[in-house]
Amino acid sequence: MDSKDQRLPLTVITGYLGAGKTTLVNHMLRHADGRRIMVLVNDFGDIAVDADLIESQEGDTLTLANGCICCSMGGDLFYALSDALDRQPRPDHLLIEASGVADPTRISEIARAEPELRLDGTIALLDALGFPALVDDAQIGSSLVRQIAAADLIVVSKSDLQAPDALSELKAQVAALAPTARQIEASFGRVPLEVLLGSLSPAEVDEIPQGCAHYGHSGHDHANHDHAEDHEDLYSRWSLARDCIFGQQELADVLKDLPAGLLRLKGFVKLDGCWALVQAVGGRVEIESLPRVPDHIKHTTLVAIGLKGQMDTVELNRLFSR
Ligand SMILES: Nc1nc2c(ncn2[C@@H]2O[C@H](COP(=O)(O)OP(=O)(O)OP(=O)(O)O)[C@@H](O)[C@H]2O)c(=O)[nH]1
Image 1 (cartoon, rainbow, N blue to C red):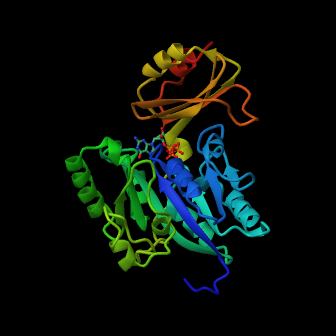
Image 2: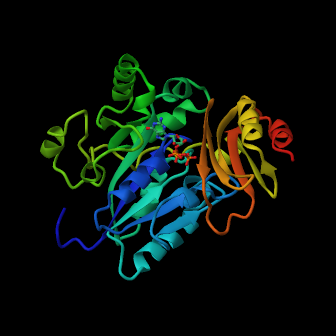
């Protein structure tokens, strides 16, 4: 990079619902090593939960909630970018964590139109466990292919959950779909920041053990992709924000019965005396006890996303009714 280049470097982080984007962003923030990284996060769910999961300094997270930036929020994205650019002092790097259904090409096009930004690259998270089934899905597959095709670096997340043979097969499949992107396996977003933010040369990256990747523009044309179908038509969203308290076992039982067709569920559940962060991706559920939640969360707050007509929202209401 030209050291006189005063533009704000921007990295777009994409990846399907629950692929591990926030986990990677938090890893980057924890290892920022004095760099001030600002995060612009776009939640597709009805209630913005992601901003509360991002471990940034106060004021260094901007949220674009309740919709997908790539479909309908171009204007809002411009305002948010201006906000980031107007900060004094200006941050060292801007990350956009796109919603899980977003087309990153569209976001980079909008960002490229801003002369004070320099697109540093696009990172796609690919869920090693979920990808094989999702990419074959007639309605979802094209979104995943579009996300990885736009990437300079593909982070194969959840590699801890996948067998080595299956991982090799997956990486070969991904290489065929995105031949110019480098791939790196990761567990809980543990990738060196220098790799993610592109300050290493390709030669230096090649010296990093275990598939760590080149990062920078791969030379493919970001501008020529058609825009995705309107995600508002494809997905349905469900949310709950109510003063209800669950017992620990009761919550575990409810989460065992989540309806088929649910692609993603996340949020904060009030328990007797403490809180739980609940995350479900496909059929996999995690419950993490939290001593406290952000001040503005006063009661149980959950969002879910599924394909339209496939996620039983009546059943979700029944399960979480208290
Ligand atoms: N085992 C394992 N779990 C992971 C890994 N990365 C993320 N997860 C878990 O996967 C779930 C989703 O992770 P997030 O980082 O929130 O995913 P996301 O892409 O930001 O999700 P959305 O913003 O809702 O699309 C969480 O329960 C994480 O703890 C990983 O490498 N290994």
